[in-house]
Length: 145
Ligand code: ZN
Image 1 (cartoon, rainbow, N blue to C red):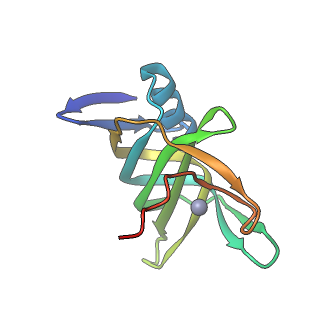
Image 2: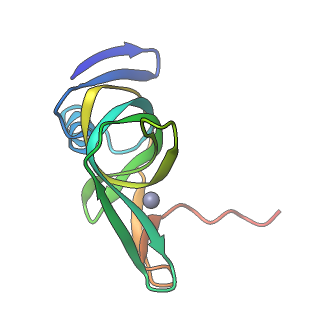
């Protein structure tokens, strides 16, 4: 991984053959970052996408082995059950130019990934939400006007 500080942001390049989410979590751990906003582009292979089926409270998961363009990924980093957790969604492009996307469980960088990683000033936590079955961001409730 290569890193350049750009004001409040870090611009990262994740090297070929590295797993994208582990690399981002490793970077956050090294720097002691507990909350961040993440955006990026690049290329992936051997990735797994998910679609959350709310009625069953579980992810439909599918693995892909193709090399695809990582057209866009975005998400955030927060703390879940005491550990940093990267919640990232991805849109990927196939050789026939069709796009597909979903919740990114994992993906190996093919070529490169160029990531804008913006640390946020305060820690954010995820808490289990029984209604959805997911660990949602546990933010303060907005006060009614
Ligand atoms: Zn998701």
